[in-house]
Length: 228
Image (cartoon, rainbow, N blue to C red):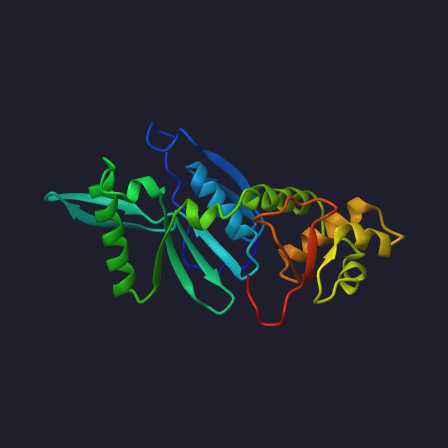
């Protein structure tokens, strides 16, 4: 088990009608444990956090707080807390855009829930963000490409030839096809795997949002101290 910096343990909710319709159980490499998500959008958000090099740790469903609505006490659980390399901690609520519009039947409850979370974060001097599909699904291949990375690195350890591939990538874009040509001693799958790991580790960048990850995908070295 990796050393935890966030002082939270995920709150596991029963697979009831409220939470059980979209239930995801995945392996979180950054936290070295199984991760449970309760909606498709929460799952996609987790995929992004797991593949964002600047995020070093996260905890899903980290904390429950109370609030009052229509003179009744209610509870709300943050969807995630993330910790960045620079020490910034952000509590996150994941919502669909439609639920943030006044025409939604969930609008009043949703906005009171968000208001309660923001106030708690203000009092505790931490950041709060509401993230919707506009933030999470930023392109036609945004999630698909990141899932490719996760599936590969979850099943394959860091390859011994990682540095060899990294040395062939500079600040200018190069296609994986040309990388394969430049690395005659490695097969194309080996180069793919190395690039997956290099992206996950924050060594290289690629346009994961608008281009599908194949031999034509272009990669380049990340500038020092620059986060993507």
